[in-house]
Image (cartoon, rainbow, N blue to C red; front, side):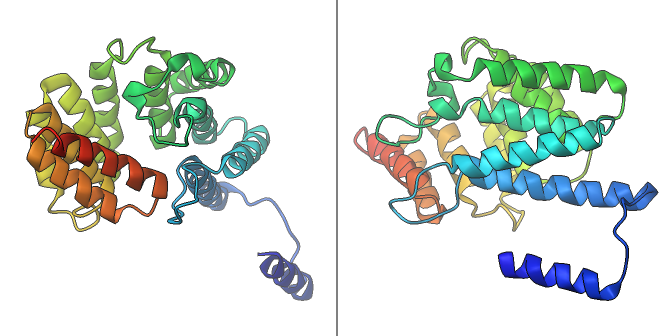
Length: 266
């Protein structure tokens, strides 16, 4: 990466083209690209895709750097609501990091996390930021995702989560275009509001999308719904398949453990 940056600098210097802040549509397009890269960096830090057994679930230094750079970007473009939404999303998501893993590095699902371990300062900052941004009228995907994260973070317990509000926000998020991961997350909200059978119906529909058909998150979600419906054998098989397909070692161990627990009941 250092070599690429060095070559890029030499290319710019040799071209004689002055560096300047883009304007208008060019600025909008470049901002969107920068936000997307920062979002990807944060996600890799929040759930690493490394497949080695020694790899942890998270890479905090990546997420911290993504948050630092997004803060910088927000200071440069304070009126850009999607940049504010992205920063709020990162803060509200990263606030749950301390509770995402157990003493041995094992994965702890959101519903089972000890919420007293969440970073309340980051939650307060994220909630304040998105609360000030949403009323400004230019709502985009990052803002909606931040609003969903805020609903999760403000709930004192899993049972107290306002799932109808989360479902309504996912309905709005889907209007920005087809996104299989958004649809998958919406299926979870549907299951929480209307029951696991309704969520399973949506999962079945997503299996026709080649982008998610055999994705480990879809398989794990299917397994969870089947488990809630009492179909333990089918749920265990789906957990096993999800474990085989994930590239994250901690997630693989977690999914395998879920399958083993259900298999012992069959």
